Image 1 (tube, each protein chain N blue to C red):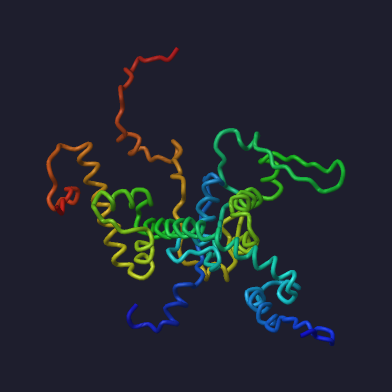
Image 2 (cartoon, rainbow over the protein chains, first blue to last red):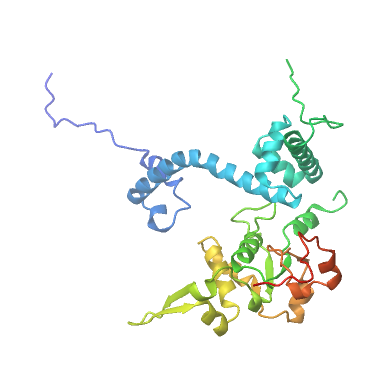
Length: 149
Length: 179
């Protein structure tokens, strides 16, 4: 059967353009200038923001470690020890706390940090005695390595 | 610490302290290194670059700083007025005579991190050429920072008993004559 009237092209029209645009604009709302309102500008800025955020995840680890080291250095200087001496002597005493935990202890548990600093100082003195002294083992020794296997 | 409210503890933790540093017979570089740490707040375990946790530092006796070596004659401070032919070069001695706090101020300014907070930190620095401090600053002072350099004593500052008690390698005989 031939259709005599002009074929009515059933065009499918986009009905959810608003939501597709909002999907992008919702990530741009805190930007400065027209790129927080205008879709064409926002698309570019949002993509760059996501790329930067992906790359920054690797740098965040570096930044946070440097921050922990600064904080530990400040706290250990309060107790008369420098950061390298503190860390190396803690490691030699088999205290395997990472810098994040030590920094948090320095802020929220100052007495615990003080005892850690005292431990590092004592281990340091034992190291000097072992290098320069007679070879006699001191009482209450901290520098003996304990094997847990 | 257990008996304070959380608000009171936070206020006390982030309070700004005032430190005193005596620059008499000290090298300005070491003075600056000690003050920059306090101005930034790096001496606190709660340090963060954005927290504005720096303290005030008051430096006295900046007129009596001591450069090592021949820096008083050899160190040159340069500046430009912005006009053509306005390049000025001044030795450390000349600058110190013109303004006794300028050397310490410039050293600290150049040692601070080069960001927008540098100016704020410089506003928290107080320099005085002698040990005369205004009363309101003196009332705020909390603690003295130890001097970075141990000041040696001159020979005439030793008492005769100390000189006599000092161990000698050899005593010259009575008829000893130097050539």
